Amino acid sequence: METKPPLPPFTLETALQKVQAAEDAWNTRDPERVALAYTLDSEWRNRTEFFSGREAIKSFLQGKWQKEQDYRLKKELWCFMDNKIAVRFEYEWHDQAGQWFRAYGNENWEFAESGLMQRRYASINELAITASERKFLWERV
Image 1 (spheres, rainbow, N blue to C red):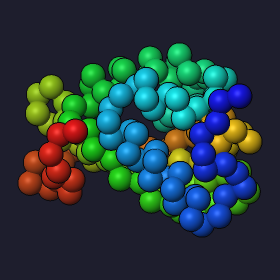
Image 2: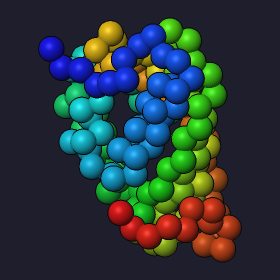
Image 3: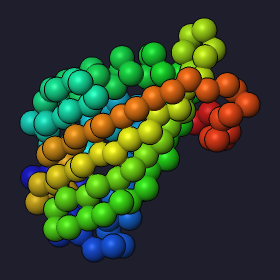
Image 4: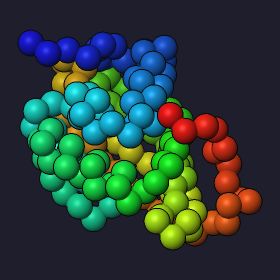
């Protein structure tokens, strides 16, 4: 059976590890790598999109990162209990025309016993920013 430690039930230490691992994976912008953190039948809500399964996750992420160039994300643990974690996040990206955006949101995660995420519900708001308003100025990964 496929596992992705740390496994639930989470402690403060393991919840923080899970959040950092998610941040690190998403910042690679590699749909294959990111999708491995989810169950084969994982359920997602991202803004107004609802879908399930690793293949759908990969497809969604491929489209996301084609549009959202130089994407950079920061996640922060909000709370946790048993097999659930809530995070707040913000990320920045620009479109093909060079317009920068910052998105803010919350995610609710539920994990299977294997440590793979079986549910991810994301609420996201976004605004256009100028390049001088960027917070995340690190190098490309």
